[in-house]
Amino acid sequence: MRQARSILVGLSFVWAACGGEPRSSAESQAGQQPSTEGMAMPRMQMPSLDRLPALRAYLDTLASAEPAVLALQVADHGARIEGMLAAMSQDMKAMNMTADAAWRALEDSVRADLQRIPRLSGEQLVLLMRAHAGRMRRLLQMHEAMMKM
Image (tube, rainbow, N blue to C red; front, side, top):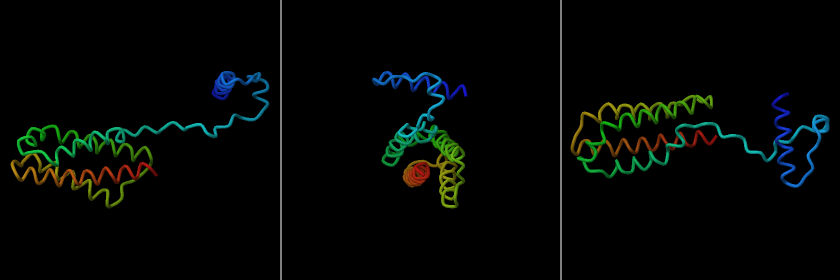
């Protein structure tokens, strides 16, 4: 009841600001309930969606980086990707979604990459990082498609 009254008071101010006459409290309560048609619903917090552009740019740099540059990235890379995987999992839980077999297989491949990356150097590191960046991009695409549902 208190929330409905607050909404009615707020709508009265909006109506008055737009040139209409505000209703009295009794008229508002006796009349129809305010329509929510056309009002935007608040966006559900999706931690991973805000990170997508920056992570995609980061993956682009990894795919074209030289071995020496990649070697410097290795230390932070695992934490960055693990953070994104956790954020995507949080998004899925918030929407009561469960991962399908394709998602789990790709996520497992990404996690396996994270185990191998610190042990590699030179051309082996370059090749794995390029393949890893591709797998991560596919995972991001799958996630983004799921979140649009």
